[in-house]
Amino acid sequence: MAIQATRTYVGSIENPQQVYDGLDSLGDSASKIWNVARWTADRIWDVTGEIPNGSVLKSYLKNQPCWKDLNAQSSQKVIEELSDAFQSWFDLRQRFSGANPPGYRKHGDTRPRSTVTFKEDGFKHDPENNRVRLSKGSNLKEHFSDFLLCEYQTRPDVDLSAVNAVQNVRAVWNGDEWELHFVCKVELETADSAGDGVAGIDLGITNIATVAFPDEYVLYPGNSLKEDKHYFTRTEYDTEGESGPSEQSMWARRKLSDRETHYYHALTDAIITECVERGVFVLF
Image: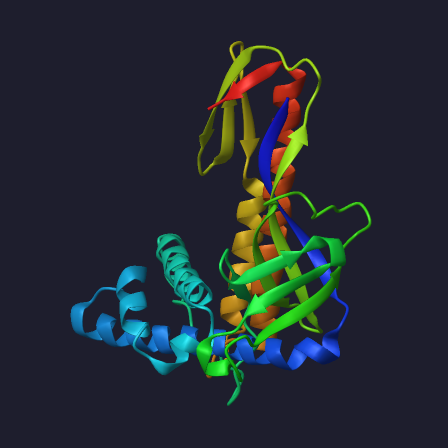
């Protein structure tokens, strides 16, 4: 039996001289969209006392010039990230009264390079030649068919050639260079005889997941995840600059994201392994 899961694979860019300037422009534009949306949210907040939701911000930003710097879906993703950041702040301030809302993406007078996400109509993948074509917004195109053609290399054990395997592509500045993150749907092969058992899974706060098997419950505590979030979030806020996130603040944000991603991947693998060993065929 095969179980579907989501995996993110990192690829290094093999033709940086051809694409880095373009990626810099896209990353700068993503930060610009974030800042305009953040400014808009702040003004609505002052008038109504409420943070506008993602749909309201998208409707407003669509009429702003910066919106067309990116592919439409990529611009929408920036707004979704801002909405998620506000939601995380709402959750955090219930425990820490000094929690700060998401700030602007600025380093002094400059904007940092933001991650740019390319969804289904924003990229074209050529796995046979290890290339991916990334869309630009109309404002950044020199002609109608202008795009970035990135040549990439992944680990030898990673195969991105499966049909429809790649769901979206993210261009990520890791602090030193651009890299590509391929978000894929994959099938995890399990034992030949999976059995006919059934288990239920419930997500929580104290225990990040509880899996109910016919004969017992297995708890997966989220202590380490909460400790990481507490430590790195405090580090981010304690080093927040007057003009936006400092380098230390940005480092804490990236580090927390990396550790959370690793934790959830490890948790998923542990739950799947437990289910396979117990002969579970259905997990709900």
